[in-house]
Length: 559
Image (cartoon, rainbow, N blue to C red; front, side):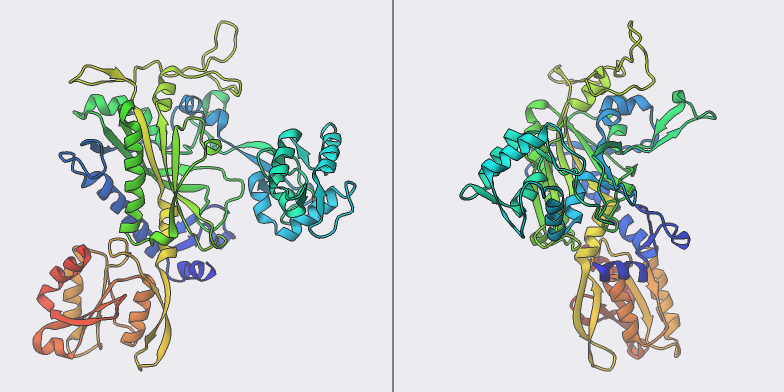
């Protein structure tokens, strides 16, 4: 991963935001290569999912024919959108701060930031009065239960707190072999939903962490001249709600019928406590989302269709099947609105071997979103937001009052559509394709000696530069012919002209940028008007007519 990060800066894929001032955590800028790569990824997604969609045929795996369209909604919306969507009340992470160095950490990430020896050291430090601990000591389950029940009633500062002692002990018994459990097993169980590791050491300085507390991930701002509660607004944490609140507008202003997918690409913002792993977890990111509206009776079929189709899309663009998994969420993982969710996960190189990170989520959201924006909600977790008050002077959490149901013009059936949401991250996708493309191999240099070659093996549709044009030398009319070819290709694709240095070094520079084809004008070109095309991956070089170069590159791009 260190090599990939270094290449990203060296070749102009990604830069730390505001780097000359020391940078700002969780924000990244795309350089000349990165902006083209990300744009190509978004264009491929839009073309494959929306623009080139054939709504006259039933696609393989689909229950019936369907339509696709798009919108572009605003980043700042009415604050009541986020109340009815649940984000204002429920969009929280648990945060822990260090009593010594004051650094902040996501509570569910603390354990992953510690080594096993740090886990055990913490357990020894804070449970030392329970037993004389040695490395991986055995705990007798019955004795552990008595100690926990005694401590659970009045947890002293710096001790592990267990929310549900009987339930926790049941899990210990399930794990224990021969009536005992190791310190390592116990530590894993303490990180489960039944245990709250309040006393883990700070991963930064080893100090004591405070108890977890809620932290809302939405960035707040104000609209208008006055910074008052009435003018409080939020940067959107997702693009989906912009589609839901425009569902009726899209249906009323068009001749679409259901099933229909409404797509959007746009920026979202989440005030992550601990952004990390390069661009994998950032505070500003771009999403590529589809909200697919369908009949409730068909929603399960559509969920399977979109889950499988999106999985195949990544493979078609060059990600190895071996480094992708499709993971169905367990019931305990599901969001409060979700009927079912599957994650497409990728084996990012910054993760431990055998682990995968989320690339895209496909969620069966039921009718939660449209119904919430119609009817609103009131629950025990509701937090005050300036809206209308009821007769008792309490905040009244209400929806828009608009009818967001759908009436089938053929059957006259009226229903609230169910929604399937394939939600992909453009930044995570870009990072995954960068990681997948990175290769090192052995190739001959201009003198024939074998050297390590760094090559970015992007799919031609995604490659930032599609072709590079070189004159072999800067004389004998070669640059003039090379520029003719360059200008002809530039009308169709992003291409690069380079006449500096030995041709072998020029090849290496383009290999690192991921350029699939290099075109060289040489002495033979002056005689028969043919040029050499070099393939990035196979290193094969073939002669083709100069006048047919645009058609040849186009044919190869279509592949």
